[in-house]
Every structure is written in C-alpha cells, then in structure tokens.
Amino acid sequence: MAVSTRWITTKWSLAAGILGLACLLSLAAWAEVNGSWKNGEEVYAKVCGYCHQTGIGPVIKGRKLPPEYTVHVVRNGLRAMPAFPAAFIDDKALREVAGYISKSAAEQKQEAENER
Amino acid sequence: MATNNHNVLPRGIEPSEFLTAVEKFKALLGAENVLTEPSQLAPYMKIMMPVAESEHAPSAALTATTVEQVQGIVKICNEHKIPIWTVSTGRNFGYGTAAPHHRGQVILNLNKMNKIIEVDPVLCTALVEPGVTYQQLVDYLKEKGYKLWVDPPAPSAIASPVGNTLDRGVGYTPYAEHFMFSCGMEVVLANGEVLRTAMGGIPNSNTWQTFKWGYGPYLDGIFTQSNYGIVTKMGFWLMPEPPVFKPFAIKYDKDEDIEDLVEMFRPLSINGIIPNGVVLVGTLWEASPTVRRSDYTTEKGATSKAIIQRIRDEHQIGAWTAYGALYGTQEQVDVNWRIVTDTVKAAGKGIIVTEEEAGDDIAFTYRADLMRGNMTLVEFGLYNWRGGGGSMWFAPVSQAKGSETRKQVELATRILNKHGLDYVGEFIVTQRALHHLIDVLYDRTDPEEMKAAYACFDELLDEFTKHGYGVYRVNPEFMHKVADSFGPTQRAVNKTLKRALDPNNIFAPGKSGIDLES
Image 1 (cartoon, chains in turn cyan, purple):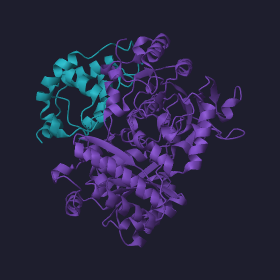
Image 2 (cartoon, helix red, strand yellow):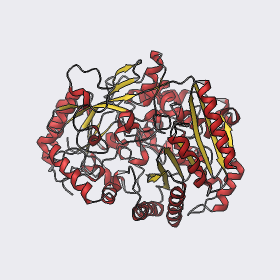
Image 3 (tube, one colour):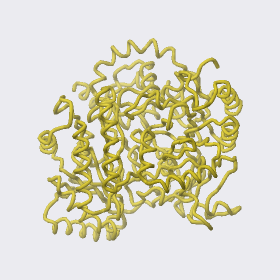
Image 4 (cartoon, chains in turn red, green):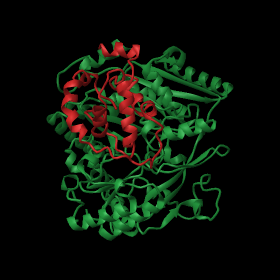
C-alpha cells in the first residue's frame, strides 16, 4: 500500500471526481461469511496501518477523507496502492474502516508529516 | 446475466457455455460468491506487470470456503472446460498479484477458506487452510499464549503461508526455506478426489505434520509452482521462540565488497553460526523505507552513480548492508557473537551495528522484524522509489560464491541501466545458494517506461540464461519464457504429468509454463 505522499495533496480534486462513481459501487454485504474482521479499527491496524502509519504510504488518518473515496481506492488501487478484493476485506469491513479513517483524529506526528 | 467483465471469456469457450457454468457456480456457492460484473472484478484488474490489464482480465472470480465446494467447482469446470486460476490471498504483487496467466481464466480465491485447523505447541506444528494469513496465524499464537514464531516473507501480514510456500517463497528466520519447513498437504485433484500426501494417507495418522516423506514417491513437490491440483490444507513447522534474539547489521562501503561479504557469510551460514536467512542489501533497497528517487532527481532514465553516492553519504547507507541474527540461550548467542565479530574484524572492513546502536532506524527495525517473524509491510517502500505502481521481481539463483554474486550484480545493473532503470536488489543467503532478488521498478503510468520495463525483463532473462543462471520464480507474463530456459525435457515431463493429472487442462493453464494447449 505504498503510495507517494505527493498524490494525497491533490486528493480533493481526485475525490470530487470519484465521489459520484463511488456511490455507484456495489456495496452488497458478504453476509458475515468471513467474519474475520472485528471492526474497521482492526482492519486499519492489521492492513492499512502497516503502510499508512509508518511513512510508507501517505497519512490517511485525521484528513477527513470521504469514506466513498477510501472504498474506491481500496477496491481499485491507485498507482502503487494495491487493490483489495472483497474476499480479503469484505464490504462491511471496508465500510467500517473507511468510516473509521474518515472520523479519526490527526496524530501530532502525522500533522508534521502532512506538512511535507 | 447480460454481461460479465467486459465480455471476457475463457479461451475457446462459447458465451452460452460460460453462462451455464456461471449459473452452476452460483447454485453451488451462492450468487454473492460468483463475481462477474466489472465493478466486482475491479480489484483483480490491478496489476504491477508492464502490460495492459486487459491481457490478464479474469472472466469471473469465485470464492469457496470448504473442500466440498472446491470439489464442486472442479466438477463444473470439467463439465464445461472452464480454466480456474487459484489464489490463496493473491498478495505478492511483484510476482503477479492475483492475475491469471492469461485473459479469460476464472479466479478461484480461497482467501475466505481460512481456518487454523490445529496448532500443536509441543511438536511445534500447524495445519492451516489456504486463506489463513501470517497475521491471522500470529494473532492465534499470541491469543493461545504459544511461544512459537512464523517465518513470513516480506509482505507478511497480508500473505498466506500456504500460498507463499506453494510458490516456494523464502523468509528471514532460521526457517527461511518455506517448503523445507512444510509438512503434509491436502489436495483436491482434477478428478474430484482428495489426496492427503505422505503420512496423511494413513487413516487416523497423527504424524501427518511431523514426518514429511511418507512411503513411496514424495508427491508434495509436484504440487508446488504447478497446476496439478488445488491445495486445501498444508502443514507447517513453527519455530520455538528463542530465549535470546540478537539482530545485527554490517555496513560495507564499496560495490565490490559484495565479493568479500559472501565469502565471509557462506561459512557462517553453512556452519550454522548464523542460522537465519541472512540478507545482503544493496543501497537503493536499503534506502527505500525513507528515500524517493524524486527527492534527488526528476530526470528520466537510470539514476547516476553520483546520486547513489549522495544517498549513501546523506543517509549513512552502505553500498551493501548485511543483516543477520543470532538465536538461542544467552551463552549460545555470546559464543556465536564473538565468532561473528572476530570474523568481521579479521576481514578488516565493515561497520557492525547492533540493535541498541540502531535505535529506531526504520530500515534496521524492518529487518529485525522480519528476522523474528513480526508483521511488517515496510518492504513496500520499494514502490515509492519511482512511484507509479510498476514492479516485477527478477529472481535469479546464484551460487554462494563472491565472484558469482558480483558477476550477477554487474550483469543486472548493466541491463537495467541500458533500459533506463535502476538496480534495486538484495541477496538472501541460504547456505550454499543465494536468492538474488531484484525489484524491476518502473512507472506504470508512463507508457514508455512500461515498454522499457518489459524489454528490460526480457533481456535480463535472456542474458542470465546465456550465463547459465535460472530464476526461481516469476510473474505470469514470463512463465513460458522461464519454463523454456529450463529446457525441453523438463517441459515435456511437466506436460506429461499435466496430461495424467488434469486431462481437461482446467487448473491454471500456463502456470509455470504448463499448459496442454501450448
């Protein structure tokens, strides 16, 4: 999930364009067949955070990223960011992690990183 | 169903035949586990290979959770001659992600077949399904309080022990050769039968995960890097957590130091002084957690030697950095540490860095994590070097001799630079042989660079083959070419086995160059 920090600076223009499309994405639930993700926080800690909390991918917490944007990028990938299928992160867990990221507060260290 | 993924169909299959098979898949698995719409298949279109996504577009993706479902899928595939490309998690991006060998194959994703069936804390064994990730296994071991380690490859958290082992991946602890530390498989064959290999053939056997060989021909090997069956369970040996773990790095200044490094580490590896998969890391790989090429230049083409030297100077990175670790009791570690440090001092060069001296250095921490089986994805920093999401692993095997490694580095660097790309490589030392891993990194959003990367990889294969070198693993785009490099007799034997075990050619045609239709 290594994405240049540069693209995040233009995320809003991208996000605006993608929002409409993202709304059309199928969000059919996987009916808890998998059941391996407890909640969005766990998905962040055990997948996203390994890159986005370590400086490998851009900071995504504390930026009020629209959940639809996160859903779209996770399902489609973006440049170096790989795509994750529903078999890996089911739709419910994806919605939860997108919501978690959207509502998360910026950490002090991250705020400094965002200034880069 | 009016449309599927851009009307992609399996090779030689009529639309009506495909639709009939899809309906049967839905009846078997539930419609929600049979994906055919472009929006559903979008995640499977993201690839890092230098070709159009459409060339590897699947016609559908299935999700199965039980052995019986896998058997049912195999039955339907036989009835309608539908080819399936099976993935466990499909997360090794530089070897092809989840992309099928060629357009139109149906992906069978076993990610949700993710039960940890058994862990024996006394014998230090595990039996797991293909969708289990290293993260899931580590969480389980922690929850149970078992002092056991896994040996992950670099994309640890999101990769599957079964998938990685079936592709004969390597890690960084003393259990680095993954297939060597696997024990027993369950395989769904093309005729629908379920094979349990080795001791698994004995009813009520309790040695399936403890004795690899069984009786008669050892079959497990033919189910790795192949398309002769679908592995639905695999046994592993887990490493007991040692009382003391001591990671270290040794930095070397000059490119040519790789020769001395290999000569120094080979005996330490063969003699078991350093028991783990020692890595010898080149400058740009070592820099990848924190340095981007655009920090130094925006010019296209190969990065100059002057810039690489600046990176070394400004970030205190060696031309080569060796990472190893010692494991055992304090007494054992003390004795071996003395041997390592005396060897380095006697060589007269190299700066030793201990964990205490490294502090929170991200590159050191990442390597130490890998050598103790912790979860980390810091390796993906490699993708920031050029950006743009292009990556292919070029992975030739080398003798563990200094002169050979230097020859390979110089040959690879010359070819990469000729195509405007950089040498970003490392060696993993496994006693007598080295996995030479080179990440061919390029900007996939730049059509010219994408073309250059393809030509570069093609030339790397040609030139290394001419010099008598072979790669141990490759992405789907180059599987036939690599199979050719291993000679017609091996190809013929592989095809004979395929004909015998999968006469309808339904399992992953093209995997490792094995395909009854080509």
